[in-house]
Image 1 (cartoon, one colour):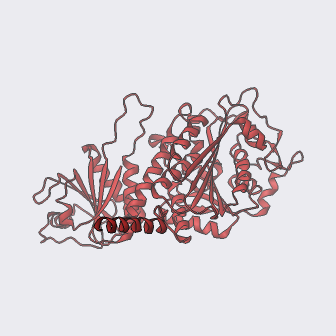
Image 2 (cartoon, rainbow, N blue to C red):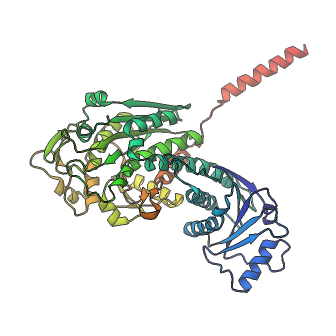
Image 3 (cartoon, rainbow, N blue to C red):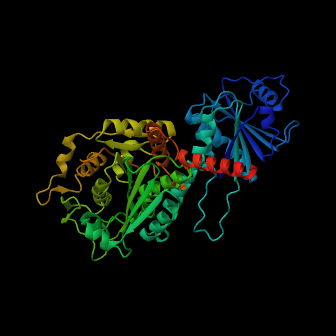
Length: 514
């Protein structure tokens, strides 16, 4: 999907060559019943007759009216332009249009529009018009290809927001694609190929480690989860080098359990198909790297994906087994369905070698987090107050929110074991917190945060599908990180090189004149 921004009045927006136009109308702007342009006049009439209310999600559909070049115009009230209200307005507008197979859509903001408003509107539209097609025999292609967003004023922030949203949507939809794929179409090997494809461009590197390399590293916890699976594990190391090597990278660690049966501690059959989404953390890392390739931020980012299935065959790890992690700590595996923390702990130890500025792991880790926060906010756990505040703010700005949860030391008491340094579970009480306390043991050398996305990575029921979260939160955090470090984009043409080219051209002209 392609986005562009133009400064336009409402009158000019109605004469643009698009198949349909969505007009987002805030409640504080009253339409003029005597206006020359038809939308304001017709909207005023609808309000006067009680056919339209100035509340979020109210819509008025107009078709082939005089003075409008486009056939379809949908006016949708965005109320006070709060993120949730803009989302409601866009969803209602798209519901009125989607049956018309729109290819080119205009979205016009009446009144003042902020960069965050544009991003919310476009992300909502992309989400509503998305459809998964990869494993369908007769896939229906997405009709909507181009979206032109406009407002009555101009600012660099608005144009930049559209550019950022273009990259964000590309990243979110790539994350959705891989999370939505059935497990036989998204094996660890498939994920490795996807990572290599994303990292094929300039400023990227990608290394994929197999079972032998992982064994040599001593990743005993990761290998324990993988030993029951016929599909070979993959440890994916992606690097985006947009800044000087001296800049410490941000490391993103994504849980890549491509299918989770629970292992010997097998899950109930009901809804087990949704365990293909247990690699939502890995999918989000792939999505972020896809967006980085478009934005070319002047930062360094490392992506680590420990990818494997969790299967219950005769070689599978058993409850009560003790394994040695890469850190040297021994772990008593009391529940093989608590496997995510086992693959993550070795990846977190591996992250130390990059001397990172921060490490953020992303995982569909615990059902307990779903009970605590539902599907609205991801769980945020962090040992660093500054990092926690930055991630929380990034979530609020992006509309991909999280909520900080506690990490009191007392929560770790249940992880004590008589037979190993630590157990991998601590009972049902505060399960999301004790899981985070387990991970915290492997993060003492860097600033660390853990995002539990078990409630936010996918939807169940009739609308079953991946959400692409928390790509929005992570990308906003990286954008803020780039700005804080003084450079938003890579300088692809160094000043010295530009000066040399200018000098060469000047000498050539002088020689020609002589």
